[in-house]
Image: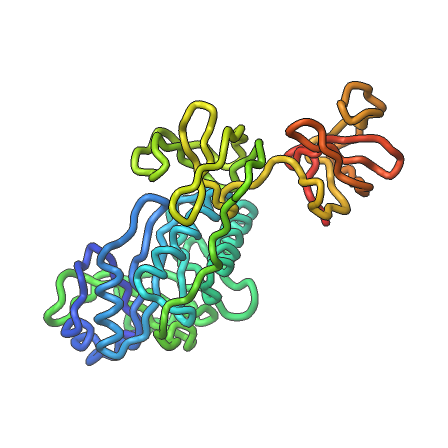
Length: 350
């Protein structure tokens, strides 16, 4: 039979006790991977006690996030969910945070973009060790081996005896129905081919400190999906808007040690810079070059009333300076012409 190196658990297994983990260790289990979260809406409450008890039993601990995203913005939002859940569950920076990618296969090109976006955001949030889990039939559609060994692959032979599959990856999940004495239900078990999941469970990683706007940028756009709320405490959700949505900000409201943005209709949204960004370049932003997103006009005046010509999408412009115009800004070019300072029209290069 394949080895019993790693067991992954979720709320379907209930809270795992120290006795449960010790029972599994007798079979050779060295590490566990607890479900942390799913999408942007579910946190597994059994993760924290199960991880704590696994540490007490002497196991290495890791966590996984079950993905639902199909876009880069969605990937970033779910990565933030995963990292926050990992921190709350007590996982340290030596633990692996796994992307469980098996819900939607959008093809290699799109999968590559969104998986890499998730990984990069988890790294930014303070967890440097990541991996990707998927089923054997998807390994040619999902980036697993980006640099050296990587990936955790599921494939369940009817009789796994004598098999040693996916040796070029971190591990092979060979069953989803293993039973251990004194433990409830069936368990996923994996044979590992590296020590990647055997890091030390130390103190929790410290994510990058959140940064909030302290001034009114007037216009912002959403980096990630954004909720609107009736109250500044964010207890009464109204609705949700996708990444890219533009909002006009009425004022900045202090809430404890942080701030919220209040809209003209009285609703509130986050002012966390990880979730929102000012729509227009700031005068002192140090922007040196931008690129037209969908094509743009050049104008003689900063009011953008007198058109000079049209520049196609992808055109790059060297910035002479950013000038203010009402609540917006314009980009002045070296030849004296102007283009919009809207970041969604002319994106930042350097």
